[in-house]
Amino acid sequence: MTEHSNEELPAKAVLCAVQLPDVDDVGFASGLAELGRLATTLGFVVVGTVVQKRKQLHAGTYVGSGKVAEIAQAVQTLEAQFVLADHELSPSQARNLEDAVDAEVMDRTGVIVEIFHRHARSRAARAQVEIVRLEYLAPRLREQGKGRDRQRGGIGGKGAGESSLELDRRKIRDRIAELTQELAAMETERHTQRSRRREMNRVALVGYTNAGKSTLMRALTGSEVYIADKLFATLDTTVRVLMPETRPRILMSDTVGFIDNLPHGLVTSFKSTLDEALEASLLLHVVDASDPGWKRQLQVTHEVLEEIGAGDIPRMAVFNKMDKLEGPAQVQMTQQLATLWPDAVIMSARDPEDVRHLHATITKNFQKYLVEQELRIPYNAQDLRGPIFEDCEVLSESYEADNVVFRVRGPAHTLSALAAQAASRAPVHLGRS
Image 1 (cartoon, rainbow, N blue to C red):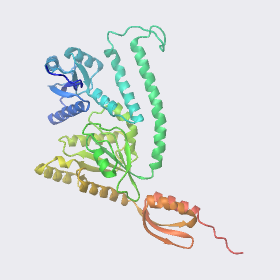
Image 2: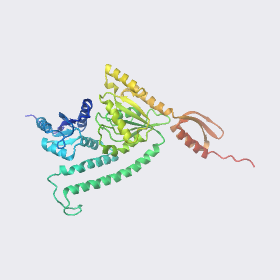
Image 3: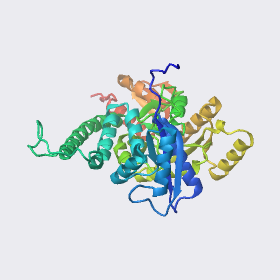
Image 4: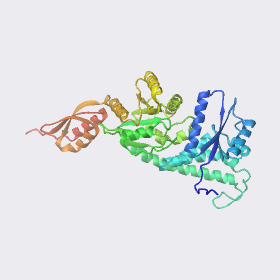
């Protein structure tokens, strides 16, 4: 007899998708492949796929009766526990399909929400994800609870006779209100932290999930950022200093990755991480050039940036993962991108020379906004030396009777503030009587 491992085997899933008339074959294949990657990220093993072309989604079961039977057969034959649909299903569609195929049904939104739930690390991200999960769950309680919605009273209820469904919904509303208050308090704290960085040079990495933003973040800052070849490997904003350090310093921030058909609630709930993009002086739009669907991913990111109000922020395209293309394919892609985006950076985040080139390009972008100025710092204001050397490039330093004279290059607002502080500390010379 063969001994069985005590380790739990990964769940098996069958994918199902409907191609509507407004979706071409390339877009449909790309979306289905993405659903497969989402399933893998969630820990499923994809064992089968069922697709159908329809003018519209079936109102009762998402796909037609023939395809429902095909899915049920695949579930039974392949011993799958889950069916993943590549659209957001209504609660009744999910319930009807689940009953017909005898497997748990998750729609695309449910899969994404569950991934966000598993990957959230910070207190704010966990609270935001929980709100979205509860909002997603609330309208589905009736379908999930059919057959058990009996009248019940009990401690904490509004009185005898409140149904199980009503009680569950009230608990959800109360929990959402509680989490919303927590997030408001955390937002005040984050606002204080961001206000300290507001006058600094800021770069935000944006782009489709799994485009290599975290790898690029680590390469540019030397920080230990979590990296994994999964969709939504990280959800929390990371802010680090560009390394080697420049004068003035440049702050880099990573943001949550975008995805096609990202549930609107998630875009809204993750506004805190997207705020890093809104407050940036420059957006690095990172694109996975090795992905066949890179054009669509480019468009999705553009649409989300417009949606959150970041459409007017200066943007630099960074076409990453060129190392995944080989020979003629790499040459052809490089030529195509260089023609379409002559100002873009075409690179691999794993190539140190490419990273140095990107570092120099970022630095050059900010240097064009710097101005040269002479600062006279009184000897009784030498505590300003720290901010001068930290926030400016010091070109020369000389000495006068009352002042140290710095020739510096830096942001105009920084130099103006330093000059004002120095003037307020200048010694007063009284004339002789």
